[in-house]
Image 1 (cartoon, one colour):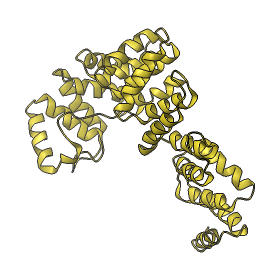
Image 2 (tube, rainbow, N blue to C red):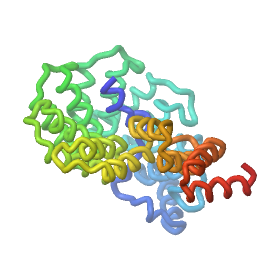
Image 3 (cartoon, rainbow, N blue to C red):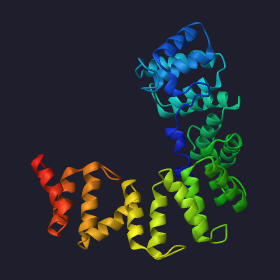
Image 4 (cartoon, helix red, strand yellow):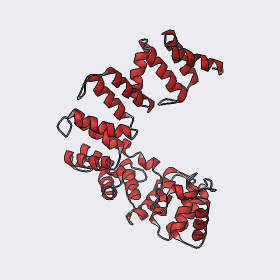
Amino acid sequence: MLIKTLCTVCIVVTTTFSTVEASSLNPVLVSKIKANAENGNAHAQYVLGACYARSGLCEGIHQDYPKAFEWYEKSATQGNADAQFSLGLMYHRGNGVTQDYSKARKYYEKAATQGNALAQQALGCMYYYGQGVKYDYAKAREWFEKAAVQGNVAAQRALAGMYEYGQGVTQNYASAKEWYEKAAALGDAWSQNKLGNMYYNGHIVTQDYSKAKEWYEKAASLGDANAPYNIGSMHFNGQGVNTDPAKAREWYEKAATLGNDKAIKWFRKKARFGDAEAQHFLGLMFENGQGVKPNKHFAKEFFGKACVGGYQEACDDYRRLTESGF
């Protein structure tokens, strides 16, 4: 369950470019890339493949998976590890090709043996999940470690989880903390929130609300949905800070708009007991699709309840939706 969360990057990971910034791929540069690719330059072929794989990356080129595959394959045949990884990713996801874990693994291995950290991390996930191979925590850990020492954040996070729960390795809390800290230092919000939880609960480390809040705030600043809820709870319960329901509510609002289930439930409970401000807030969430699927009818329902409760802004929003046909 835990590593499933940690390894979702295997499914959503996007190709990175070591020498070309996405913002620099203007028509003039794209023209040069095409010329170099057609002349057999392996790196140019890889980048051109990426242009076709990712919509909006290169001006004047629209997403076209068959063409992406064609150029990646030309580059991969020449030994380009980034292209090999990208072909593996296409087979892993089933983008433009029939999903085939066996072929994905083959290309990942070609890239991984050349030191490509993304491919190493992806192989770790394949062995962890048993995708095209038998479940093998030991091999998963081995590949995660290769990627992690190169600074791959997702691999560091996964490796930390394996050490924490003793999966494929002897349980080692010190190593778990070390890898969470490495990932957190590289800006991984999930690991930052995890460290916050460790200090909050006194798990692995001595309980320290001040350090917990510090890590939660770092994670929250990067858009983690759980961290704002955790900060809100600290203000609500007076843990490491003065009890402050208003601040707690502020943080719960941030968490709810990011889709945090606990925060959304908190507002729903408040709304059920007639809290007009909570009802109005839920109305805005449903109207704008913040943290929930947009639903104007639900939005209007909550606005109506808040209006009955005397919340004038909700009355205005209810009227606005009515006049727009809802």
